[in-house]
Amino acid sequence: MASYQIEWRPSTRKDLRRIAPSMVARIIQAVENLATTPFPPGSVKLTGSDTAWRIRIADYRVIYQVLNDRLVIEVVKVGHRRDIYR
Image 1 (tube, rainbow, N blue to C red):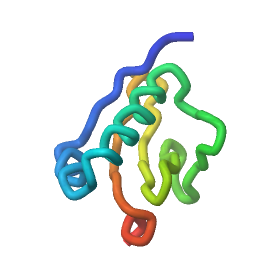
Image 2: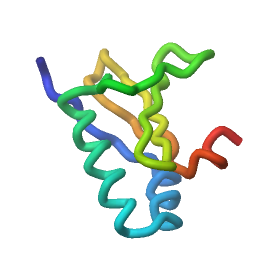
Image 3: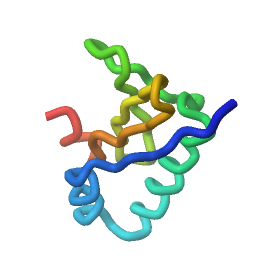
C-alpha cells in the first residue's frame, strides 16, 4: 500500500498553538500514523461528506480529509471535543 502525504492547513497549525505541548506531541504522532493507515481503528467517517474523517486523541479531535486520487491526507481542524464541531 502506498504511503500518503500529510498536509496541514495554516489554520490547523494555529489550532495546535492553543493546545498543551505534551498533547500536541500525541496529536502529531497520531496524524503521522495516518500516512500509512488512513483509516485506523476508531476513525469515524463524518456524515455529509465523502472524504472527511475524525480520529480521537484523548479529549481532542482531528478532522481530516482523505484524497485518494492524490494520495494526500489534509488535516482540516484540530481542537477540543467541546469546540471542534462549532
